[in-house]
Image 1 (cartoon, rainbow, N blue to C red):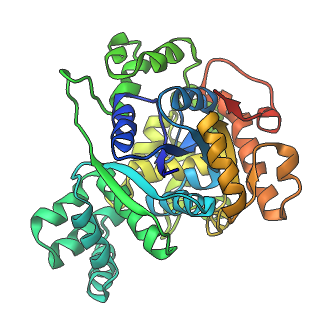
Image 2: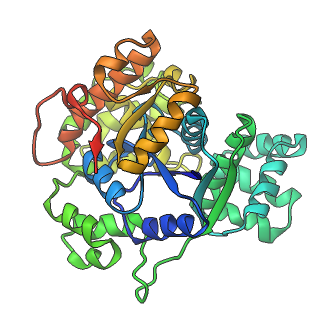
Length: 387
């Protein structure tokens, strides 16, 4: 048994994901674990379709076992998101490698950047750049530009390179004994039917059925039947919740600092639609994704303090027959409890229960981002999906 893990969102599952999985198989891996975000994703938005449908797509298109990054960490910075994913992978205790897509496809260059990020010179330059009021990503790139050649530092212009570098950092920080593998991503390519997830989501939301060219047939059939979720659908309830937060409440949210709470407070009280709120908060220091995450955490009552802790369990979402082979092995090697039912989580620590309660509340609110209101309690009733 040779096991490879992938951290993903499958939002939605598209041809690029299938390409990554096929490349992993070509490298001789017999079993694949996907560690995925649930109903809310790292860019601070609801997933376009439910996690149940994304799990089914994954299991039908090459993944053997699916585990969840809890919403507490799926709605966090790239660094915390990566750390949570790597923690889960390490805690299986039997994973041989982690694979991820990147724009550069150069694992050695990415490792060089990780080494540079840990130097005192980089830390000093980063602090100086942040003091000049630029975003963390830009401050980081400027610092790397000063100590590495331009070709390598330019890798930081691309989001999947950045996320891959965070995976490599976490692998080092947690001393995880896995082989990191990066597969070069294919950009939009009409001949070979590849397109970014964000572009596919735009097509779906605009009822442009040409998205079918960029997703596997199974994924297309699910997307055609599934309820679509979008930030805009929850505009009124979103603004209502934000207007009921105090400055003190906002200060407790992740990644809020340096008076940003006042800017948020003023914007949600002054502006009358979600887009104008977002753009009035945005500055050259704060990216749109960061602002969306902050506001979504405010909407879902996720506080900064909870994100500083480690993941307390491995929640299993779906499996096929090969996935059960992984589980049989991991029951002897796992460093965290393996859980799939609410009754199992209730037996864990108070912190584990707190994390799961955040999941429950978030899923109860997920339906607000669609045109179909669902009943509460779906997380508590959830059963692992089998294929």
